[in-house]
Image (cartoon, rainbow, N blue to C red; front, side):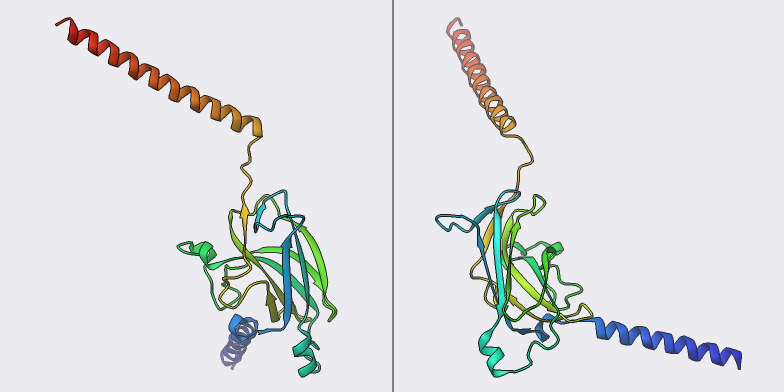
Length: 214
């Protein structure tokens, strides 16, 4: 009897674990797009769509889609938090498995860089985020996930279209070197090339003299 009881308990635990896993799995395709999200590079004139890591700021704003709100009263009843993330555009995911898109949000590598978390309000909010130095050079967009009280994604919004091909911006990575180092490297490179040209010219002259004395 004791063995049977242990088997029942073990089976119940396994079933509970499976149910928990199923409940925690969120598919991006199942989420409704209910937020309007905008992002622009601060003080960039003209709008080049190019930002420098460690220097430039993104101004991000979000709000509930008013058209959906009018047609679906209580649409945002479960919304608690807005999670803003920096996401790779498809062009920067090609042949990069570590950035691979997956419909299962627990496996998706599209949006790995967190920007901010804010309390949800239907009126919306905004944030000013300095692009951190660790952001790699790539093409990006911004996505906002709406989370419920359990921290589970229940809806979203993003700055680009469904195909993730419009309203994109490029981040130029920080070199990690002081400007004087870059100047010194350029001077050294020029000196090396000049030395090589001089050496080849000298060898050519010696070769001509050698042939002429024969």
